Length: 95
Length: 480
Image (tube, rainbow over all chains, first blue to last red; front, side, top):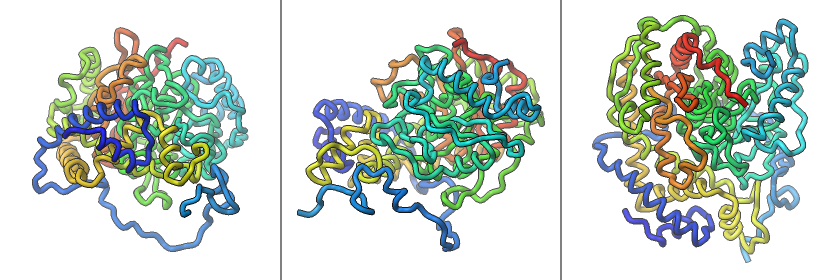
């Protein structure tokens, strides 16, 4: 399928990445190349084939609900670019 | 012989004979790093003030006796920066250890405070996508070290590390090991805990050892393997002593040679070196047969859908809120996300996040992502069928020896194709090892890849060890 600049802009918005105009150009061309290559998959016969999202036959792994030590908030906040008290600080969300 | 030249097991032996001690080994490696790393760039942040090393001290009773391990920059080490060679994780100092690090410390290992270089977030096959600049191949400084664990592989090859940990999502342990002439092992998916490994593609990632020889690989795997309640995808299955099978011989072992791995695209010189290696295995008693893995051609397209889809989701957490870089003076929250991510992800990271977001987006999910998951089933079934009849599969690790720095960086698709032989093991969750099997005319190492059925690490170690002991390659050292 053909990738337009509008598609790239839309995807960049979904991915929350600002792209410079020159990046928009290069990425459109490169993603087009990659998608053309990926199109090879259309040749594979996948009739009645189930998807594999995880390689091992494990699901709903349970454990006992026991209390144990976890990360203290002071520790968790050590790397924060901005903190306010015991919270992560971010720009105002609601005016 | 200088201490830095020894394997980890030889160092342990020295300590036991009281000919050396952990402190001496660490300072010897430190000197070696200062001397040769300016040429190689295997380690990151070397110029920063050195944090104190996690005290090894005299630990005669522990399995690893205080011998140091070098760690890839995407595995969390408490108190030591872990930045995934990315600007977006600038300054990140993990408040906890990855499970593999806890296990290493419990086994008496020292953790080196400098981490090894990598492609940003493990996105790449050459370690050129690092915000710290590329790692150079110790065998030829103009060539790449491979990737994404290029720093770990080059450090081991250049005797700047006794041994190291890497991570492998599509070949990121095996391909750099092959390019640098060392041993790299990717365990079965679920064999080693991923807790504390900064996620790239959660259904494919595994941590594994990069070592000077096969015995070291088995010893390091002994320490890091096993179930972990912090990783629900790790498997509660007994961990054998992987060193026990070494030396038991490979007479009668059935080897499959998939014809799809020996066709166009494979460098003729690499092909003949690998064929000689297969002859060597036959001379040691193995039986070979050419077989077909018919869905091999789909492995790269499937990988670049599945891996980027998972990556786009995993990397959503880097948004300037909890850790790492945040853009200056954002006006509002959305702008903070967009600007932070736009200015600090490198080109390959952006490309993969964009591709992954696209294949998961409304209207394209079925055509790309779901289709890829179904073809993944076909690839997995190909291997299952083979392993009902054969003990292992033998292939080249990479279609070429190390390429030149800069050769492929402008053409992402060309770079992706260099992973063609390693990707299937991740898609099918299989254990695989790369072991040195010779050199090209230009003096660059070539790797032999051995794969086995899930949880049969003993098979690949046994075959790799038999081959290694019958050949001189693992004894060769680059001139630096």
